[in-house]
Length: 359
Length: 246
Image 1 (spheres, rainbow over the protein chains, first blue to last red):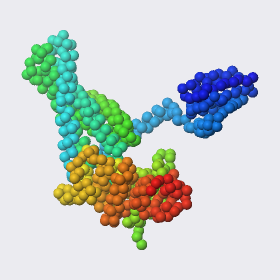
Image 2: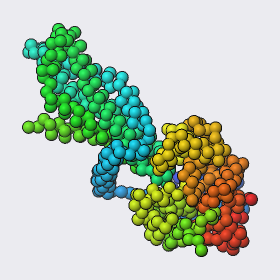
Image 3: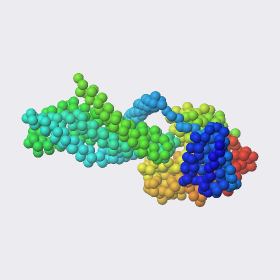
Image 4: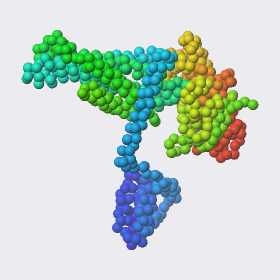
């Protein structure tokens, strides 16, 4: 049996699909040794999609032992068939598909590499922080102050506002419950302990991780892709004392200060609720705060903020320096850095809370 | 007999599974101008990064000023790099600081010179590249050609003995590219520099190079004088010089 298919004057990506479907349908229904004639008599133009479709039909037919005859091909069309028919699609390698086990293994391996690199970066930075004191030449002049202003001073309004709202909300939520038991004054205890022990350092660190950690990661990543880090190295300059140490020093100084401020403003937010909602005067409120806060809460707050400071900067530097490729990788590194540093800050907070409060 | 300033022997390297350079060997003597040429992706920039120690894992050896760049320690590396200037493809200027501060970085880091002397040296180097007026500019305010010139001033600030230039004319119009080539040549003649230029621009090669190292698929197909390269019967070298209008 013989089938005939006549192609139109123009065979392009716009109309080839209907002919392709028709031909594949015929192939499906045909049995071995049957014949399909594709008539090119009217074809005056064929594009790459048309050629690929015709060749695909040929391959399908060959597999079923069906004869394909292409007839009345004009010389110009023959040239196009030869040009686009040369591509050996079978040579194209398919991307390697990774299994779930491989993905899990890769993730675990990358985590180990992250921990190793983080420890090395911490060791290197700590060394240069100490050595840098005796070698001021290695630092960029005025950079620590500049960074302190960028990380600390410029973050004051947002840290203050968030801390105030957190203290305010904490007091509001607890006031409702404690008032039922006539324990209004304990709102001061709750807000003070929660702010100083937990919320102050944690929320400040999360804000700084989002605000300054992202800026540091983006800066280092951009410097990496624009070869600025390579240029420093080629000038015999180690980028850690030159770029990282000023940022690390300034955040270690400013984050505890911001935390102290956040603690105070948060408690003030609670005091506003005490004053307006529970009729507790500011003086009794703050007397209660002072009586409940022990040395342990205050020192824990400061120790946490220093640990968080180190985590934020080193995570940002780590992701920044690992950046490869073009400008789009800067965005990826920045996002990864912020996610990782917020996770690590919360994880470190949990560990430190266990360490300090689990008797 | 002069000793080579740069010795590369049976050098093989690559990224992960792909070998980029195979058995590369060449010697560069003081005062020579060598153009490392080849088509895009042949391994020119990778070779340059290995020579200046930015990439380290490889087989074979790279000796720069008689120091083995594979096992050099941090202190020796700094010592070697003080004698080396590198002009990166995009200039690689630090955008967060001014032009003057960019050029003064190596002086501040590697010398004990007082600030006013450093400033004078920086202004001298800027005038050498014809840009004495941009001292206080931000690198972001400069055109591509100016950025390259400033980067050249920074590369020259410690009076290096050897200068590596990665695609100095890339992204520049022909007039600016030519003036940068002329500047490199005049600096070489005035300062007695050894120049290693990574490029694929034939016009620039013909103007500047004395020797040619032709890389193809990571292998050295030709290493010798420019005149011999122009007469070479190696098909790749021949077509490289033939395809671009001089």
